[in-house]
Image (tube, rainbow, N blue to C red; front, side, top):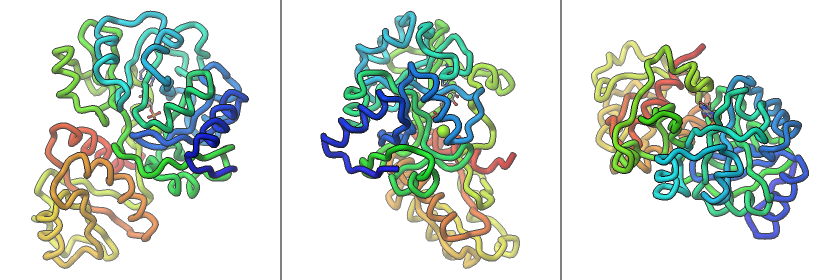
Length: 330
Ligand code: AMP
Ligand code: MG
């Protein structure tokens, strides 16, 4: 495995490696991705193998600019074009009818494909230099916390990939928002780094699939995901400060949203450590730090992690979704 900095020469190297069928870890603004040529089924299979990812979980195809949409999608629904023009590059994945040239392994046999143009300039350069579209899931073992630094990837997947490009810590820090654009009213398949409020401003109403239908609409959205090794116990907003200290096992840590929340939890005296998502209560900062805090907590060997939901607005929806899935052990 080669660990490279993001000099232009290295980005060219990474692009050529993808074109040759290698699997390359690339930084994006959401999380680090493990990329392969989206038109090369053999390379894509290696991505699934490296991650132990079940093949019923479709990959997102990344493009260097919105102009490349037509190379992956068979038709571009009107609202999809509108969102792409307004919000790309960015943490937004649009699910559209797929072109026949995209191998089934990429989309788990679905006749739709998830497409995204990432905002991270390093990701866009690598895709551009590869001369193709890049299928890339997060660069972590399936089910574990997503990586937001190159070091996370080296630790979790280092010996299973051909190359890792270090582009610094991810600024958004949670995965993209995924929207199914194949219906007149777009369907939210996964809350993520693009706030739903911004999408609604542009295309109006959004639909939310019923819980039991969700598995069909977006096969990868498993209940247990993004999970640390430690048990994560999730409480409703503000409830953690009311917890009975005697019920907290030794060697537990807590995750507070802001400085005031952290102060209340520290006062309880039952947590070995209290992490703060954002001292000033900034939702963007909280999202960017969430996975890194889970990684650090695991490395520190805490038995249990106590967390509470954050306000359900903007990126708060994505944070609550990831906390919820991290709390569900299958
Ligand atoms: P990840 O690569 O781990 O960020 O996850 C990609 C997720 O996007 C999958 O788990 C699916 O839930 C969703 N997704 C990707 N492509 C499609 C598609 N064609 N239809 C529905 N959902 C998709
Ligand atoms: Mg993932």
